[in-house]
Amino acid sequence: MRIGGLQKTTLIDYPSEIACVVFLAGCNFRCPFCFSKELVLEDIDLFEISFEEFFLFLEKRKGQLDACVICGGEPTLNKDLADFCRRIKSYGLKIKLDTNGSNPEVIQDLVEKKLIDYVAMDVKAPFSKYKKAIAVDFNINRIKNSIEIIKNSGLDYEFRTTVVPTIHTLSDIKEIAKQIAPAKKFFIQNFRNDKEPLDINFKKVIPFSIVELEEIVEEIKPYFEICYLR
Ligand code: SF4
Image: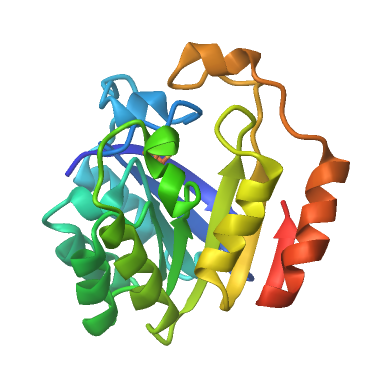
């Protein structure tokens, strides 16, 4: 496991909690619109931090943070993730796991061991179009399993989709909603072309308009307790 970055404070990444965000390097997907290029390709020499530094930071911030968000890359690729969570929890922090849902067994294990408190899973596309969104071959049943595990986990959770013209159509968004419904929370995130994506060609892609996405959100809202464009 390599820590590729640390955001020391966030008020928006863990609902209603003051959190830090730790970024773990490495990912098994290659979403062309991804903005975490250095983490995904593990080109992180410039900003990698050691475990000692990270846990020293948690020690110093004791009492000031409520939670830690573990994201990537894809955190569940790390065999020592459960131990990492256990150590973070020893500082009295809640944990939110951000995942692409590719490792249902790891999610299940963390749920059973009560090592996570909140899960946010990216649902990349309608199941039939997943390869186009993640740019690798992948067994879609693993994604379906993760969705079910998360929905039945008893934890607070959210699903979210970054919508990208050339990968998604507007009707794909409705299709994704139907595939995960009913569920607690589903958030639509509009693609942005203001940073350098994994596939540089995506810098030229023009995002959907807010108006057309808001219209879709109105249509799919009834499937969820909470659903909005963010
Ligand atoms: S957007 Fe895709 S490639 Fe980037 S970290 Fe997430 S799953 Fe990996």
